[in-house]
Amino acid sequence: MTSTTVEGASGQRPLGVAVLGHGTVGAEVVNIIREDALDLQERIGAPLELRGVAVRDASSDRGIPAELLTTDAEALVRRDDVDLVVELIGGIELPRTLVRAALDAGKSVVTANKALLAAYTGELAEAAESHNADLYFEAAVAGAIPVIRPLTQSLAGDRVDRVMGIVNGTTNYILSAMDESGADYETTLAEAGRLGYAEADPTADVEGFDAAAKAAILASIAFHTRVTASDVYREGMSSITAADLTSARALNCTIKLLAICERIPGREGRDRVSARVYPALVPREHPLATVAGAFNAVVVEAQAAGRLMFYGQAPGERPPHPP
Ligand code: HSE
Figure 1: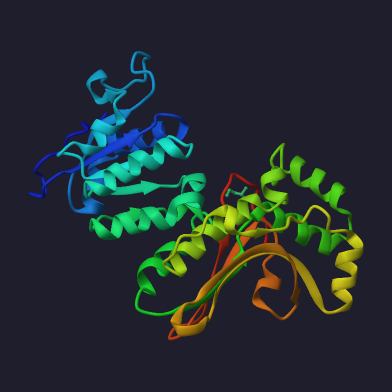
Figure 2: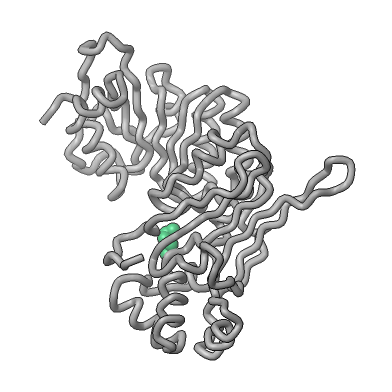
């Protein structure tokens, strides 16, 4: 195994990493940092050094040196030799406290904790900005599709008016399969479960909770404000019938579960934000109508950049579906 401390080869100051949580993802991140250290160093330009892993129970054997384990996550994130904190503990209030502590201390943070971000993206983004720290959460919305960075960085000098898209792969798989086959919702949901496209409990997806959380994150960063999942108007798609899709077809439309985040111009520059998730009629010629299967697509409308579209596979281990 490669050593965790690959010092000095590049002459660069090492980047100290703290990992919060050692579940499935945390363990994998720790493995990558320890085993791919040289490769990471080449790509990053500085050695990555694992400073510690915060766990609830430091007594169990986790296959990593005992001196790296700690139950004091707050002390770990504040350590002077920690530059980057990877939050993988899940939940909301504890990670909020730890991510705030890290950002307030000027550390960069990586998290894909959608529940945390759906409640606190605005607050955490403000903390990051005021302490000149970086907050990365690209994986929280639309899987590997790069949509967060364009909103937070590429379009930082532009004015975004609308972010709209299909941000839930499960429901897009079901709706497009219903559209193609004419089958009803229950039959298509059961088939989606058998094929691995839908969870055993699909409530968060089909009732729009997952999309509402993502809409809150997108609205918060697009409009530099604080939007939480509970601020988002939400309607699921479980009541859509085969007959609804037939009617949509007659209008040359299809039905998609859309997340729509818009800036509503107000008086004296006091704009408002509208964020909503609901099954919408989408004209067949609209780019979002062609997004089929477990795919996501996000359209961003900005004043200078115009209309941009980001498209790709939704997160999750699913069989591939032809676009
Ligand atoms: N269940 C989500 C989806 C993936 O179907 O898109 C996790 O965000």
